[in-house]
Length: 183
Ligand code: AP5
Image 1 (cartoon, rainbow, N blue to C red):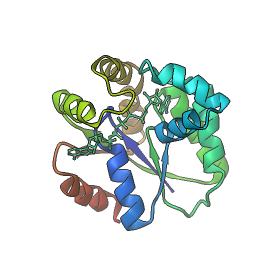
Image 2 (cartoon, helix red, strand yellow):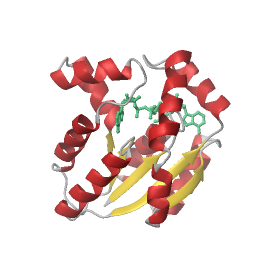
Image 3 (cartoon, rainbow, N blue to C red):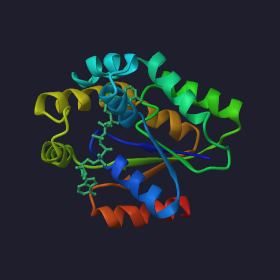
Image 4 (spheres, helix red, strand yellow):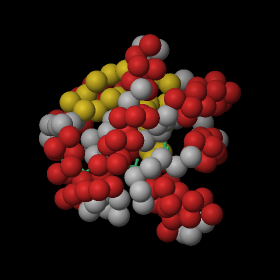
């Protein structure tokens, strides 16, 4: 079973995914984390991903789609898998539908987190990851609006979208998430 964690940079996708993993036994697959690991290990994928992440651009679809296909192959259809930060383009969403059908994995729901932009900027500047400079964050937000936000319509049409107010305290958001997932 697949659960998609969706929303702008800094909305709390990774934070909620880690809580679901630790407390409720979900599997957490984050494409951002996968690329940061590849960068650390200096693999070919890591070198390529870095050149995009350093600018706040998306890693090309063909690369991301392959990384996720391979990762999903390691799990059973009965497991509860959180996809954090994937898909991020319509092409990735279509590829996910295809691979999910091939593997007999259903997309249960898409949790769409929202937080005001000023708060997102504050959170990320406070965190200070390599791609958390003001300039890169602004580009990540722009790329999100242009390439990722159109997916809201894609999943609304499929009746999968659940909206969550991510601006509340972490534990309050978590209770809401668990309520939506029946976890
Ligand atoms: P990725 O790592 O996915 O980054 P992102 O989407 O920009 O998301 P973040 O990790 O910044 O935010 P989050 O929503 O997970 O929030 P978090 O819980 O960390 O992607 C990075 C890059 O990789 C992309 O720019 C792209 O280049 C590439 N990439 C990844 N996936 C790709 C794909 N599918 N296609 C192409 N390229 C891809 O929280 C943020 C901060 O806020 C933390 O400090 C946290 O402690 C804090 N916080 C969380 N919740 C709360 C709360 N409720 N209240 C207060 N603080 C909170």
